[in-house]
Image (cartoon, rainbow, N blue to C red):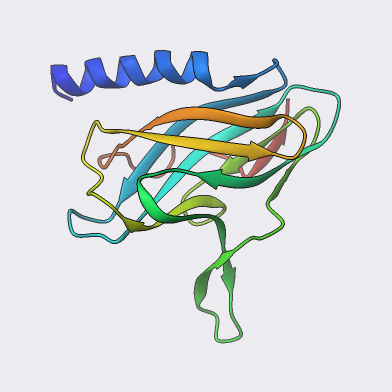
Length: 158
């Protein structure tokens, strides 16, 4: 990793640590975004969403100016055994005291109609909308080099 990448990653960590907490109840960690290439029309963001509160919550929307459309998506296996991405209109449940993973191959924030390429080290402003915690603004670093495996479980209790 170059010095510039290291410094950008450090700045991103500090930005996320401060911006990704809603009244101490919902915490966002280990967030990153990626697109499949410079000419990609779509991208995605992944993260750990921790509910430190005593009340269940739900991620119901995501907003960003970097794309024409932003939706919550997951992968479902169709009747032919092929994985397809689908919009999850009801959002993702975030039970009290648990962590919900938005990870590659599973639940994620989908950016469609990118207005500019996702380039390594860029910061993507995203507003996550929760049923109870309200809006949480996060700056998500673009990490095109990240390999799967940084996030281990779909859900786990704290």
